[in-house]
Image (tube, rainbow, N blue to C red):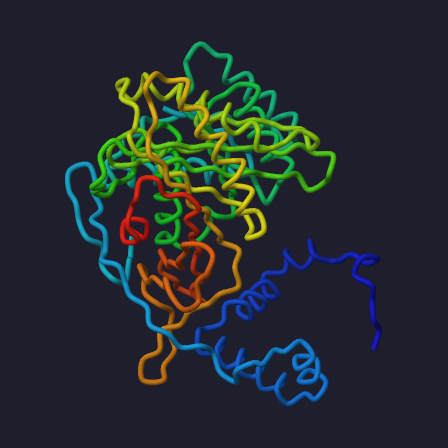
Length: 423
């Protein structure tokens, strides 16, 4: 056996492994275990720990004991929400089945033409109208060629509503260059498609194209759907912070806010989404109030000059050790921006969202393990004793185990009930 020091080693061969579809398929099959398989492996691990004298002695030294089985508790399923479309509304079933420029390389020109034809047939049933786009063919797939062509297209007299690029393979350098050009240097909504995703059965192609059209609709300011919200004059704000991989890189704060009674947020890529770059040495939380103020100043005219009475903030990227910091420093900075508006003090709810958790839930029926249905809530027994929190499964898992999301309410001056927070 060879023991390696993790800090002195690095992985090799990952790019080659990712290119081998068989290896990727085997790894995916190993990762996407069924609830039954996951349970058996977990209980097997608990049994091995219990049977190991060394492990038992170490646990005893810490004053800990492990149960031989997982903990069993009661949960409940929230009622399904009604989905409101443009001309209809419906309650989803339990199985939950549900002008632009095109820039592409000459080698995939046939795919581009097929894509345009498929878009014309798919957009009608979902209520979209897409005019026939202008096709621009590239002589090669170099980054410089893409950048030069895009600049030429954007500088033309005809205003480009959306730029759609088809690239071959997973080209992170090319994707990054296109997004930097379209988001920073010459702002315009953009959509990048990997040519490999356009190859396959017609049924798969139709599904891919439908999802692409929905993304394009959002980037152009469209609303895909809405739900009934009983609270009036409510604004929902989403907030996340991205930290660069190295210490010398800057952090980025991203905001997105709802703008109507259906609480339909605009995509973060829209130009009004406030982003602030902060140096590592500068206090990150001190800039939050300033950026919220700028966001409000922009949104006010678009909301008919009617400020929201209740504001719900969903804050991502916060660990348990940072909850006190959010409560004591970040929230006061957000509340400070309200004083810039005369006689304005809305009630506020701040919810921390944690997706990277190790907690799993299973539905047990007649000793059969399955993934819980969407809407399953656990708000007792396995929750925190210090914070008001709950676990919610809001999606339908087709493969593997459903991983819940943890929601922690750190502030609730609106006095919203647990049911309101969970729904």
